[in-house]
Image (tube, rainbow, N blue to C red; front, side, top):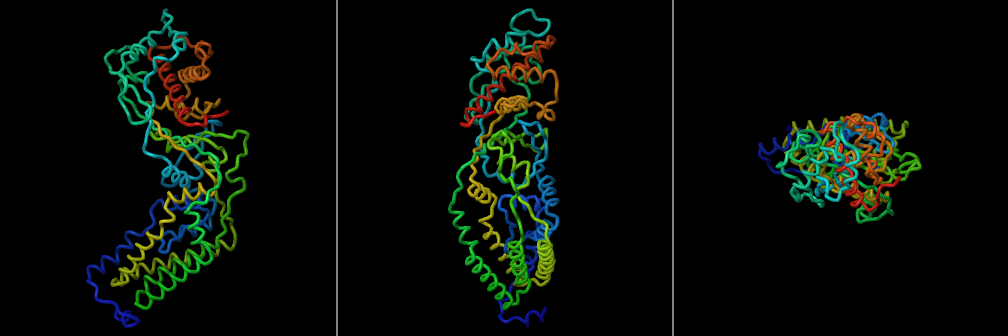
Length: 488
């Protein structure tokens, strides 16, 4: 240790031992890459088209960047689909199911645009609901023109209370269980007072807009200019020289590694793929449902411009071209990672002011990251590409009502997309048939799927009536909330 102290040009005051020991261990404990570092890195890369490198990169980040330049497509696919949040996408219009191609970027957009205000969907049918829609068919064994289960539904509706939940813009009515019908003892029909698994649907509407130059774009233009880069690198070189003069060699080497890594990442070749944010289908709009799995409680409906949504969920947003130059840069980043690791271990063993300097550099690095927080990255992407996103959140009393509302809101003729969420069944066929009739303002009795089914139990019939009716009412709320309604 004495050899290091005598080699210094400038001297520093005495530092208490407990302070030096704590400062030496903090960077090794707190400044490590997390298990979802690759996932976040690919998400930032997809939106910014640049490799994000800090002044003091977290330990392991440079190694991940080197793998990105070497393996490119394989690395991006693995990090996006098998990261911290593996999203599944259900294409409502086409019926296909696939893992999200840009999970990190989608998560960043969701966190930025989705708010906390939630609208509660109706959980009882209104008095104005068309009665002929429920009185045309009766379940087997019933001689009345109005089914027994339907009479139980309307009895519960008339006896219901008015407003019980004011969480959102649309008030919901929750009837008390004072009048119990045998036909509504359990299952989906028991909306009047049984167990409910609330489903939250966040609808994100993507629309085209003119590209915008905000204050953030002006700041980027100044800092990313040639003069701005020269001044930034000059400041880092001066800081490195000052650290060497005080004998803080580990901290100086860490900053030098950061400078080399930033320079190498700026020279990497990263391009947008052909057809980026463009639509290659006749349909201008699309509807894609996103969730963590089939049994989740939080869902995200990406709707609107097909070019934007399809590029975000189904296609790669960046291309790292394989080349000898990128291989060389990957080797430089890998070496920088090894030198950074050795320097941080050296600081932990050296202790003293070297550890204090490294903690200060770590704090300054956090402050320098203000331009590249997730929210500003999303805002920058939306401004540059000319994209507007309007988000609304809705609470449903059941999954069937939510899926039916999506089906009617999207005006989709495809039903296979929901097979993995709600299994195909004759009751599902009847529910969808009644929902189609309600959407067309026709009598459900005209539909063949209902006419051919004459053996409904009271419980099944009540479930069909409520789920289709509430889905239809929820779809009307969705169309009212979004000015641009779904188009065929």
